[in-house]
Image (cartoon, rainbow, N blue to C red; front, side, top):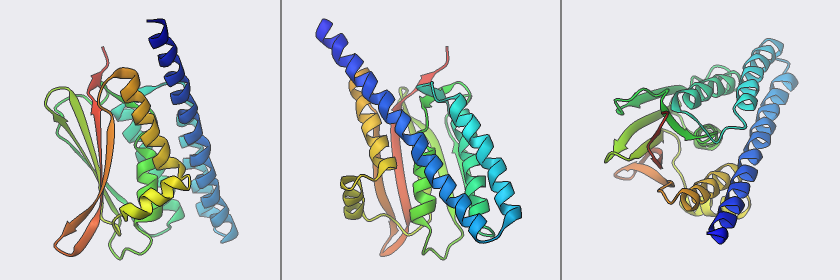
Length: 222
């Protein structure tokens, strides 16, 4: 029992350290976007970006001590982040669709903090650069059996090269590596399924985009 307690403390410490890494990563990328707007002389858009950025940072800091937050909070933060990127991309519209098949109040469902934003950030920065389509991110929520929450993030970008993804993780790509390690630690700590899967959506030879599937235990507020 003492060994198990010690192992759980180590796992929890590792989990907390990983959670702390994601905030500086997000802030660094956001500041790079702000720098781009300032250097381009776009003062009006720089001010808009700063307003959204301040709101998002305040929200992230207020929830930074929480291991779990409501699905509603995470999606609200996600929408604020997309508005932030919208300013950086100027006229290019990023459409976010949410399909909720849970038949549960999203404010009662709990998921790991800062889980979805890095995945959407990855899609916007790497999935759409050479895509001629209007950027679309479709988030689908549903239950698998009665105890699993499935979250699918589907974009219509350039697809994902799984070999390149493995190379990126080896080279220390923080966002994806961080999420995979957090989910692995949560699985060990709680003895429940936490997993993530990446795949390219295809129709015949045509690449339709990338699909990321998260499987989490279905947790609700008491």
